Length: 75
Image (cartoon, helix red, strand yellow):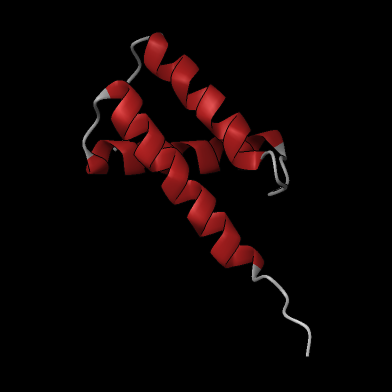
């Protein structure tokens, strides 16, 4: 019997890892970090980005740039 990884579970695990990283790196609370992850997912759609293995690495870079520019996540 072969075991196949569930892409949605992998996506959610990677999202949680990035959320936790930005909480730790930037001192954000969980709500704000979640909003940044939501904002990245919306931006990724606008960019036409696929949910590949680099999706959340690119998301972390985008979030870091937005935070460095002192932008606030959308509500």
